[in-house]
Image (tube, rainbow, N blue to C red):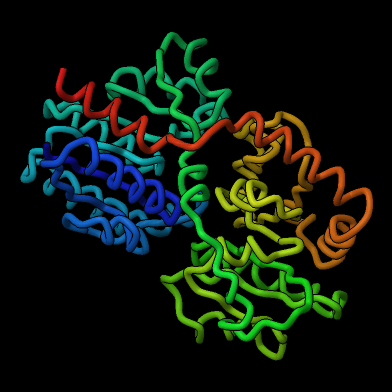
Length: 368
């Protein structure tokens, strides 16, 4: 069968690649065309556009890049019609993908959505539109099934694809030596993969370094940027960079400072105590605070439905507060309490196998 996939950011590229791998096992004749990234490209098929040209974060950032977004939408619609896939598989990225879903539905293309938009966070009435334009929704967070059911929509819970990736991970025991790291305990910095995230978060992450002389700071660098790009933020700091080695970094890390997003969940699944940080544009944050109706921003706290990791948002994302929270999780009761909370998270997350389960469901639904 012919599959058209759309992922618009690094996490979507990761999940898309795992899904493609699973689809190739279930469907020996699988053909792929997609918007995605390097990981999806490594699985074969045809990459139409890289997510690095598509990911804009926040209300104002989207507004300033509307011309590019509309251009990408137009190109995607034309390419979708030209390819005529058996099924369109949308991966998260709702601002773009819901528009493509509506277009595909109008043109008789079956629509599967993998990783639900966060409609439970704000403007919940969007579920009504999703019911109309999406044929099958595959959810990766346990509480989403009940949420959709309350709106009269049946969805499939497939587990979380991060568990697939982590279960396949094999640690590089030469990681320290190969990256010229010392025997000092590591504090990992995960500032995100988007330009806006890195530029807002990395400087404040690095600002705490002089308070932790007995630790080495290592940055998980996004492959879409160069070492020279990161060096402008590192300056005279003795922080090191590692590219495409985030899981090895987490495997060896003692603690972490993490940008809100998928990385918070990955960090927790590796049992690394963390401080979650986030900064957005002033206007974007003001709008979000009016619209968003959830208690937490990190996936760790959302899944467990209580505070396990500390979230430092906007004005709270400061050198002083990050330092205080980092000290609390490096040793002592704060660290122990967080690790106990992670045990609860592991129980709720369940077992690996999301990619395989989703692939089987897509194939079954498409053939029927």
